Image (cartoon, rainbow, N blue to C red; front, side, top):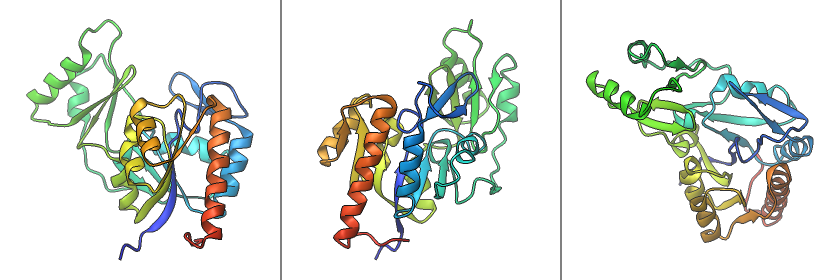
Length: 248
């Protein structure tokens, strides 16, 4: 029998966090993303009845800047760097041995992003054409078969195929409910009993949510996030009433 703890898995960017200014600001390298005060309150109430895991492409250093601003929300785990790093506490130091220095040194004009523990984050020069090809050739020439992940103007190299679900499972959790909006949320959404997303989510995400009879908010931005969290709270309350979910 699977004795993993059932949890709520929440994505950050595009799900909880949005570019429209709100009460809680989370800095990025070049811009801010925001969480509304109402969303923070709903998260706090939800965390009283089900453990919450953040699962994101961001790194632990960055997530800390959000978590410190919402101390009333109880998080039981953090799956970062798209699943390559999983922690129960953000301050944990993991024994990860990936030397990206050699690759970064071969790309001296590229900006290396800081704070990542198990991947190499880079921003290529704006003037460079075919940056992905240049990076792949550099990796190949050095016998590195890392997985290349594109995220807007950023390029990441992972030591293996990233998986948020693998990160959640490594913490001995099962995703009962998942809120996500993009392709990197697909594996967790597929594994969840209950799913929810926003109208602005990737079409493949919405397809999964509809297939699982989940919930897709018709709202956008912070209003959609608050709608999703309210739906989640009601869903959990119903499960508790039916004795399908044990409080932890």
